[in-house]
Each structure stands twice: as C-alpha cells, then as structure tokens.
Image (cartoon, rainbow, N blue to C red):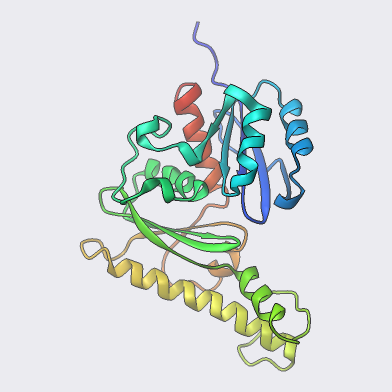
Length: 257
C-alpha cells in the first residue's frame, strides 16, 4: 500500500517577518504563525522544532545568520531553498537563464517554482514585502532576472527616519492632494510605491519582446496596496512562496501533490 504524502512544515524567514504554515496534499491553506524575524532566537527555533518533531521542513531564509540554527534544530529533515538549485537536486528540472542562480533570494526562488509549475509564462512575480522584488520568467519558463526596489514600509521608514516629519500610519490616501502633513505623506509614499511598481512592470515587460503581455503575479503583505492601483491584469497569490516551498517538499520527500 502506498504511504500517504507527508505533512510539511513550511517556513519563510524574511527580513522583517518570519512566517510558517502546515501543508499537505491540499496545499497551504493559511499561515499558522507569524513573528518578527528579530524575535527568532535560537531557543525559539528549537521550540518550533520540538513542536513539530516529525514534519519534513522546507525553509526559505534570507537572513544568513539564522540558517545554522535551523540546521542544528531540524537536522536531516530540513531542506533549505537557498541551496535548492538544479545541481543540488532540490528543484529538479527548474530552468535558469541567469548567470549566478545561487545569488537569488530563497523566497524569490520558491515563488518562481510555484509560478513555473502553473505553466503560465512569461510572467513577472511582484513580491511586496520589506523589498519589492520583481522576478521574471521568460517565454520558456526560465528565471531570467528581475529588479529589486524598496518596499512600501521601507520607503516610509527612510522618509521619517531622515526628517522631522510626524509618525504616520500608512493607508490608501483619499486623494493625491493631501490636506495635512500626514495625508501628504500617505499620498506621496503610497503613490510612489504604486507608480514605481507600475513603471518597473512596464519596463520589464519590454524586455520580453516576443510576449509583450506577461502574466503579472502579486504576492507579499503589501500586494493589496498595489492591486488597488494596477492597470494591467494580474493574479493575487498571497501564499505564493509557501506554494513553492510545498512543491519543493513533495519533490524531496514524497509524491507530487
């Protein structure tokens, strides 16, 4: 009798937030937990490993100092996507047209694996987090490059940290014409984020001359703010990184879902 596919622990350790999800054959339905990455101490990581003692674990980590602690805590059941390149066998068959694939962030790689699996390319993946990362799959489905810009909250923090402007909570402005300092900050930062992303998408699309209308895939915590102002068709996939982590997990530990 064939063994049932395993349930995985999927971890996305980003620059600002560390999120994890449990996922099996039906996919990652929701995020199980979320903490500030700075709170992920060695003791906390060991406790997470003890909480899920048998789960194969797939890790996308963009904070290098955390990776050794995850390796010690999870041992042989851990797969790091930072090492998930074709020559290392963790993403069998995933194509690159990129000089140094090892430089690609683990979260960008996991998202690209998920987008590639749908077969809808060329595509531009826009991950809206601490950074706004644009990852491009060409007409052959190969990861061929992209762009990285400051994220929405990063732009706000840079502005407030270098000026005497008042603390401001970001939200969609009612108008581009701010009637107070805080309204002006919201309008400027939000429109700069949206307009910059739209221009980068346009310019990246121009690099794909044979397919001028690539699929646009939005993900990340601030994707909703971009979706409100994007004037091209798009797909919103909040769990795109986790979808890619799950696919890598099945390729390493069990039958494809």
